[in-house]
Amino acid sequence: MEQRGVINIGLPELSEEQLIEIGELAQGIIIKHVFSELNRSDVKDIEVTTRINRDETLNLEIEVYLEVPVFVKVDVERLIDEALEKAYEAVERKLREIANEGKAQA
Image (cartoon, rainbow, N blue to C red; front, side, top):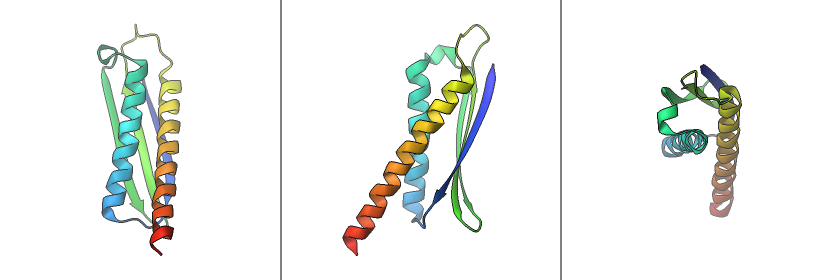
């Protein structure tokens, strides 16, 4: 069983360092959530990709690919959706922290 999930998050202007930190935060949250529900031996393949798209707006795209053996009884789609939701919440919190730091320095 395999499943993909993708979310896009609009971002304010951030430094390269902040963008990397946001991407790493999202990846870490997703992997932590998946392995809080599954044993390492239950996962055939997991890929978490974060991309920064600079079009008219700055967007963070998070893509998760998860493959588990057929005998592992888990709702893969639900698990990915939950992991993406947790990552989204963590990124939102981090963006608020960054915004508050910016206000404090102004």
